[in-house]
Picture: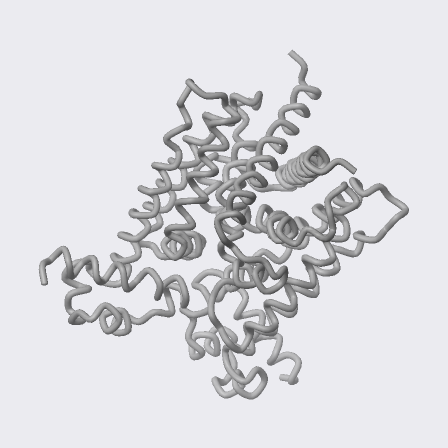
Length: 208
Length: 208
């Protein structure tokens, strides 16, 4: 087995384990057994369990950032950019649900070794989205508003995947391609209408 | 120390511990030490650590349900009902942030002993809110739409509290009374505009 194979096996085994039980609940022995590698390999390649989590979060944010590629594409309208970004994020999270949930679920917990990584990546993806929403008439200097809108889109999408088992049971729905097409429409409508509602209000309060 | 005191001490100690480290990462010894009670008391009163989590979730959903009291209050407009519900939830979560985060953070994890409690409580609070949003013109028989809108409001509010440390750092904001008043306005605007956007669309697609 090559180095690359061993590393990949550890990461691939960690994704569903961390997603189902939570990072903290998974023992390093359990992870090694699931990956079918020697326990020592986890220290060797990742410097322990926290290094595995860090590598997974890096992978998530890399993919998520790629979904924001349309942010500056001025060949299409801002509305169309929002729709493509939402569609990209939904499809990315669909294809990488466990990876996305590992990242999202671990965001609030105190793991000192990755605090900096989390803050840096979250700020960076939020900053990129912010550029776009100011095209809808919001004030780019309004930090308070930015802090309120920033978590709104990722929260709306990821929370829906988080509670999927509950939703499936409670509403008797099947989450297939058709479902997610409508989900993209729904999130886009709520987001665009919501943002333009906020822009109307600030326009009313401080007319130029 | 009375029975009630001992139980309360265990619960009060568990709230910040579970919130900061995650339920799975907290050992039962650590919890007993933090509560300053004998280890055996946790088995005696709660049948183990999972019983403590269950009791905390019950407490959260009880408080959250009280925030929905205005759902059927037809002495005020549907818009005003939405605003009061959002204001109630934000204030409840502000006063019980750790309790709310323990519940929210544990929702996706597989803890068989509480799967039923989670599904039942989540469905029940969602069902109550659904009654209200159909006053804005959405179709009450549209289960797919309900499954998409259901997690939207609690997600928007709770996710903001979850990533508070990151938001505070990234945007240099102070989360005080004034902040939360504006947060309530912002969430209300996004919610009402979003819902009415969806109603406009379904009206357009299937005119009566």
